[in-house]
Amino acid sequence: MNGAGERRLRILGLLVGGGSPELETTRLCAVSAEATGMTGAGIMLMSDDAPRGSLCTTDSVSALIEDLQFTLGEGPCVDAHHGQRPVLEPDLAQPVVTRWLAFSGPVVEAGVRAVFGFPIRIGAVRLGALNLYCDQPGPMADEQHADSMMMSDIAAQAILVLQSNAPPGTLAAELASGFRVQYVVHQATGMVAAQLEIGVGHALIRLRAYAFGNELPLAEVAREVVARRLRFHAEGCETDPDS
Amino acid sequence: MTETDGSRDPMPREAMLAAAFVKLADTLVGDFDVVELLTILVDRCVEVLNVEAAGLMLVSPEGDLRVMASSSEAMRVLELFELQAQEGPCLDCFHTGRAVVNQDLAASQERWPRFTAEALAAGFSSVHALPMRLRGSVLGALNLFHAEPGEMRQSDIDSGQALADVATIAILHHRAAQEAQILNEQLNYALNSRIVIEQAKGMIAEREGFSVDRAFAKMRNHARNHNLRLVDVADAVITGELAASEMDRLPQEPS
Image 1 (tube, one colour):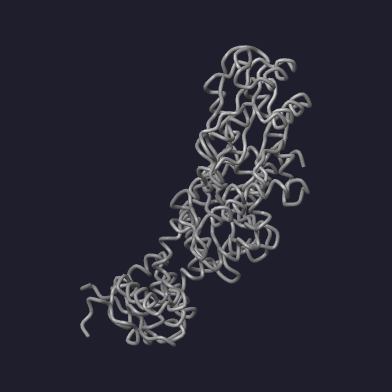
Image 2: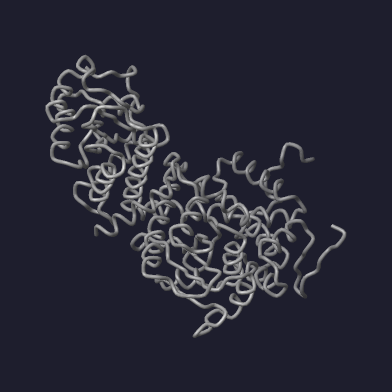
């Protein structure tokens, strides 16, 4: 247990970084990458069946990794959350077994060579997953793996601590700010549901299918819908260049 | 007698919740051994900060300080004495929320008569205490005692404060682990509520030809007028029970 205590202290020390003990989600992500020696990191919050959104990402590549999982519903964070175990892909460009047909291509194109997902949870409480990527292929060293496990543990507690300071019934401001970009997705979902007279779950699927089919980020498609430049109707979709 | 800065306010909520952890720590329940963590931390202080001994005190739910970790038995005895005598650097730091730094024991007989005698007898020459702070509340303090005379370097003081901050986070995390189920339910509820409200905004915006901001204003106005929760209004919109046309008009809308 002594080793775990030392490891936790070291990572908490990185989180504090000389400032006050106030937590910021951006710092959680930055420390995740720093502590594990990865190129970039991100944290996704997930419900039982689907990704809910990004808490933080260190760079545009991590943001792509998360956005694709949000759009496609497949990827290392999704698998890690469902299976409640680390998901390790040391060579995404030439995997031993191809796991993610739609996710891998765009991500490799963006420069990712290895990607790892670690569930973020406390006991039976499952919050989401930590994703880590490297621009070089290769497995994690034992130390990196142990640091990643510890980091997910710390992230889980930090998320709950942040929420514990929020007024009852509301999302903590520190968590909400990371989610801001996803609100437009839910607004678009409501609009598409009204346009097609279908349920919101079905509407989200339609949005995702459009995003994937057109190789666009889901949030961008959502913005087009909310700006009324993109409409859905039973026969398909139309864009309005005059808007 | 100890110095105080006037009457102390009732302990703020965060400090009470964090202090509740102290009781739990005694039973060593939780996902990690926080007492062991704090012990490692005070040992780290001794290694890194050029001090002879370090100790950590936390406030209990009843409002009094308890010794949580000490780097040596002599330190532990002295900290317990400090609490018993109700005077010393840790108490001052805790009550004021400000660091006590470079207090030379040769000059502190008036400030802490009994503590000074004991500390000198134990071989210490100067004392420091750094606050463990959270959003304005003080959870406890980190004691750092020197055997050599001389001032503590600013870099060591800064590092010591950083270590105190690490201890604060560790304690908060332990509490979160204890209350994980409750906090997760609150988080889920807050997230789901927010999602439902955003979806409802989109629906009303589409059906009425509004902007989403106006759709939100409509829902909020209706919720207030009828003493309903916003999330319940949004839910009713999603399920089709409540149409925008049935909602109260906004002040600027024509009748």
